[in-house]
Structures are given as structure tokens and as C-alpha cells.
Image 1 (cartoon, rainbow, N blue to C red):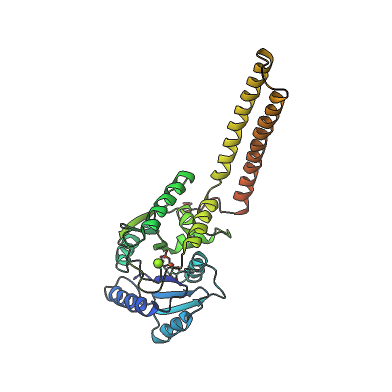
Image 2: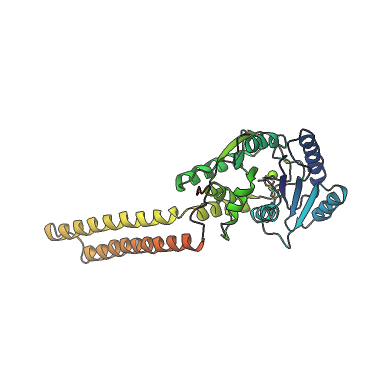
Length: 317
Ligand code: UDP
Ligand code: MG
């Protein structure tokens, strides 16, 4: 039976690109349908993330023109990650697999074939589209992104492929994702936690077809901070270690000053006691913050209410 493929495409102020994106997706779907790879029930679902321009009108227009296109209209702008999640959760019951893609055609539509092959022939549940060039990103974005993924890998226990949210997920992988009820969403960090067999395919990332990036520097920085703080409590643990080390140095310093005071006795009046107080209290403070941090770290992990496991198989009788 041919695979039912859904594409989820989040759109925020993308009126300039929807025509072209739809044209290219339509051509791709037609080819895949005639090759017998995907079913006629396959759809492209645009998620309008509270756009201020005519994006929703455009989406409705596409829906009128062709049953291949559907649309989800969010009540207001909730950001790329939430728009993506809205799409995935809405279509999960209809699709055998879902590919998420940006609206601006930076993700290469021809990569869909390779993703489907991995899903159909190799039974992979997650296929990450990884860019094998970053020529089209600015020098700044290229380097900050590289650094970001290095930090993420250094901090986390899981590996996160360096990819934008261009990826295929099987139906059961999306149901797995649905088990994560957290508020602070960083899908790139979560999808690897769902588990199942995954792989990567490489593609060349193109230029944005029209319009401008919806990720200005401010959003990029907050996205990066979200990414780090929602996947890892390690920064807090670093405070603990710095506190502990400072505290040990403080004790050594205090001992040194006491010994020096009594053996040489050469310091100014009150110097030794003052310095002892400053170093001692400073070190104890940092250590205390670190210990509090450990507990906050536990709370942070608890409140996520993440599933503790996802069962892949259960063989019985
Ligand atoms: N996007 C969204 N909501 C937002 C910001 C962006 O749905 O609040 C969508 C946007 O329409 C695009 C995708 O997320 O389809 C990626 O955004 P963009 O191409 O601007 O990011 P960049 O490629 O520059 O990182
Ligand atoms: Mg883009």
C-alpha cells in the first residue's frame, strides 16, 4: 500500500512564497503519486502562525484550488516551534509519515525522495535533513550555529543532528513526541529522545525564495537559550562546581592567613580577620547557590513531566 505522506509547513508572513512553494510541492507530489510511492490521500498542510499579511488568504486559495492542500490557522503568533507542533499533532492520526519543512523553500524539496526511501525501504522512524553546506547563511549565522551545536552536544547526554526542522517522522514517532507535555518547546532536542531508528540525509540548503528571515538576532539568541536550558541542567551544575572549588580555595586561604598572622604577624591591624570574613562568606555563598541550583535543577526536570520511556516492542505470547 502506498504511503500516506503529510507535509507540515509553518508560515509566518509568507504570502510571497506560498504560490511557488505550492507549485513545487504539487509537482513533487504528482511525481511521487504516479511512481506509486505515496498515496493520493497525501496532503500538504500549511500552518498559519498568526501572520499579519495575507498568508491565510493564500492558504485558503490553495485549499480551494486543490484538495492536496489543507490549512491550519492558529489564533495568534506562537512561534515556529509551536506552529510545527500544532501541525504534527493535528495530522498525526491521518499520516503514515510527516515531513516538516519551512515555507521559504530553503529546504530542498527533492530531498523528500531520499527521506521517503529511508522511511519505506529502511524502516527508519526519523530522518533528519542535514545541510551539507551553509553557504547561503551569513558568516555570522554559520559560525554561531556551529558553536551552538557544539555547546549543546557538550552539555547534553544525547546527540542532536545539526539540522533545521526539516525532517521526516513516522506516525509512531509523532505519537511518541506527543507524550512530551512540556511548555518550553525545542523540537530538535526532543525528537532524538523519542528514540526509534533514525538516520540523516544530506541536502544543499538554498536561499530564501522571497521575503525576509523571521529569525532576527534577538529571536535567534532566545531560541539558543531556550534550546540549552530546556534540554540540560548542566549550566546550573557548573555554578555548583565553581562554588565548591571557590569554597575550597577560601578555606585554604583562610588557613594560610591564620598561619601567617600568627607566625609572621606582619599585617595591618584587622587585615587578617577582614579578609577571612570576605573569602569565607564569598565561598560559602557560591556553594549555597550551587546547592540550591541542584534542587532547582531537579524541579526543572520534574515539572517537564517527560515520559520516562517509550516502548517500541512488547513480545508476549
Ligand atoms: N515561522 C513561524 N512562526 C514564527 C517565525 C517563523 O511559523 O514566529 C516559520 C516561517 O514562516 C518559516 C519557518 O518558520 O516557514 C522558518 O523561518 P525563517 O525561514 O524565517 O527562518 P530562517 O530560515 O531564517 O532561520
Ligand atoms: Mg528560512
